[in-house]
Length: 356
Image 1 (cartoon, rainbow, N blue to C red):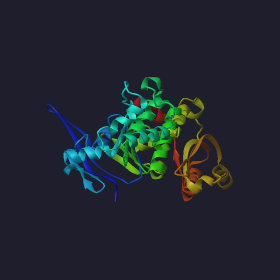
Image 2 (cartoon, rainbow, N blue to C red):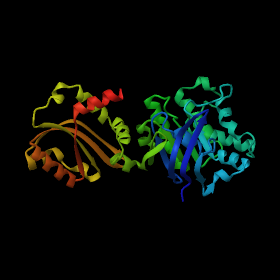
Image 3 (cartoon, rainbow, N blue to C red):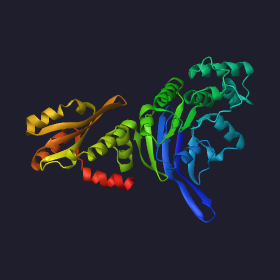
């Protein structure tokens, strides 16, 4: 049974005579202990979607089931209790500047039945967890951006939530600090068993933290699955673009498009992308192409990374061979679960100019 079940969710906004569909027929199942990424560009509807989870946004249609309970049937008191069980991390921290770090973390516990002694102990445990020992009496203005986000994370955990929502929590941070925050969130996910729902426009962030991902575009989920499934075999062009940005394939193709040598290859020379996963990563591809087909290949770009501990590789290679030989090569590589696709730099230039 899923911990969070979103069933055919619609969110429609009406302003005067204009109707805007922010979320359209979205169904997602988020299991307990998942780190679930929802990725999309600005305006895709991802932030609106996750706000229905804690009822900050009521869906126009569909159901939100949490722990097997339809929250649309909750009383006001039950909704307040639900929100205590769902921590929220904001992009710009939302700390109270006039309060110390420990008072910021303490604030969500005000008005609860937790004793003062237990509150103090919990605050100190959370400060230790997020690595801010010794800064209890500091104020937000005395902290770096990464430290402020650590305070925000500790505050979101103050009431021991079972679910943690991160809304673009790393987009205001530099790359090094981003990785440190993602490492902390992964620790919270694994050690505390907290389910994390992460909203982002960066596939790198999803890759570093999540075990599952949904890709949104114009209010719809266009693709979803495990990180390995989506990264190894993306179904939509949008997902491919996200992935090619994070593995630097897009940057490599753009760079090649500006090089005269690659744009004006001779008749038998072509550029290809090799995509392989798992055991096929161990295949000596370049050697095989020469020994079996007499095809001379040149590696132009290479990338290999591990997704869920499974190797996933991308190569851009230049092959000098007849078209009939290329056909045989594609069939051979397909039998090895290696995918070979043509790269047309002229088409890439046209596409980039349209996107620009």
